[in-house]
Image (cartoon, rainbow, N blue to C red; front, side, top):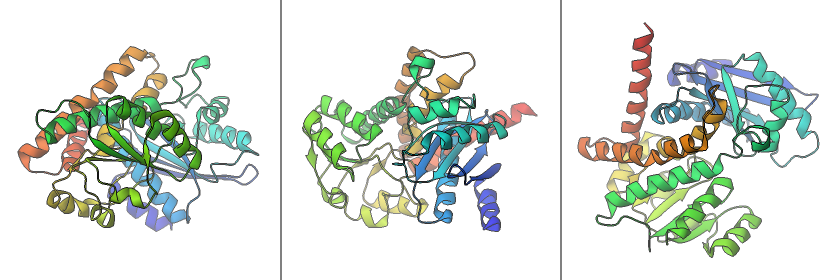
Length: 357
């Protein structure tokens, strides 16, 4: 297993992967630090039941690499990191000591990794971390934090979707009347549905959580599909907002959309699907280029200078321009949008390395 991890680190360019095991509080934690050229790594802590440790390692390595590109494209002086706790996210008993121990683990890393909430974790969890470590963001506004970053992630994705619509539907500047399928209505997905319905889009949602579906229907009047049938719903835009790798060779055969623009990380399994996207003439908005609203929010909190809501809002609105730049260059050069976005991020990091010499 150690050889496998080192091989993956070599291929992906990771600087550090750490494993923490504290059975007394039930903490099994993996922290991956991808690149700290631009600054300390920052990324959320995902709490999830994995099929096995190999799946958890693959998840945290992919996510941390994506965070490097996300922060670089967003113009932040931060590197990419991510962590995952191998545990049931619904656990309540013993949750406080577990997250306090996570704070101790962060202190061992000496500030190379800053944590925030992610899938399965919340503001309260980060407050427990904060009681032990200062290397945390996404904490309660009452204590000087920026709170839940989900609304900002959703706003950034919505801005990116507008940019894609303008390119796919010439002459159309809004989403009025367009059909959008939203896969997952958790924290981010629900906020995205709010933006979409306010803009006049016709929205269909799916989720494994019955209460989330009920809330989406009652608040926004959306249609509902099963988690499998969502791929077959006729739509103009498909918005993955749940787990990663749901846009793959199998699901693309079923999707009828013209745009894929969602908040989930690692939406594509690998570059093998580029050809399918091209053949179906689907415009794909690279996830790490458009879902950076959350990291912008927590970056503001992590900044020693301190940033204002107006700064966050301006940066998140800038995701529209970033999306325009990526999609326009993809169209001009004939390169896939994700390839363009990764290269833009790598160029910024390479420039920073040259200036360090």
